[in-house]
Image (cartoon, rainbow, N blue to C red; front, side, top):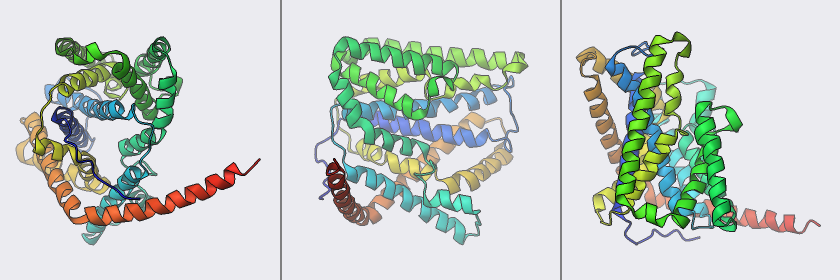
Length: 371
């Protein structure tokens, strides 16, 4: 099995959108550490704009996640092929980074319980980076989804889109436990909706003004809904933390924002090497900045130092600066990782892939011989 990198130049409009998405994800994770009880010690909303913003920042990560799924679905809905080396490379990269960073923390005195060690050494299995695990499952099942969508006529496909949107972006949004909603089901639903847009809504996809209008309405709708629920939660104590339902991945406004941004930026035909390089490292950036050891044992300590040093007055500025700093450091680490380990990782992936293919053929042949 020979692994080759594509030499075609990718549209930097879509790559720019991925860079924006990874920043939104970093921004949310930074603010999530800040919202920990040991930092702000706040369980319920209070009439304070800084706290209002900290909780609102949770939405950015959901929007970033949906953007990645929309971008991937746009290209995967035309493909029925699974590249096993792609999955293996993700698994190997996640494992190497997870174990390497743990070893560094261990050398500096970290002692962990057995369960923590298991999650470090099997990060994909235990969903340590849940988005990556969920994305890999979506990628593995996408040929089946393509087969289903290709077999549907336009009206049937449209009806399916209406049903899944109502089920998981309306009913599931109101109450997340309804109809067995999960992040994977939401991702599959996005895939089916994006497939319909690509096949039958070309005019909508290329209409910049229409998508700008959709973007503005969706942003205002998201802010308005969150604001209403936030301040209702202040005045009606029984609502408690219900205002945070708007930060889930099945928020319909977040879906519309992601689709509108994709349609706008994908129509910007240009090429920028720096943007494309950063975008190509988005997976590694995610792995580095959200590493479990760093997330639990370092990021909160940095916040404790920042709050002790600067107080709460410049909280929003600190979140923005911390996010840019963490994104920059993660980019540098991702670049160094690629330079140092890319050849080794590709050779390892090739050997594992060849072995798995042989095993797969062996068992499939035995299965096919069973009458």
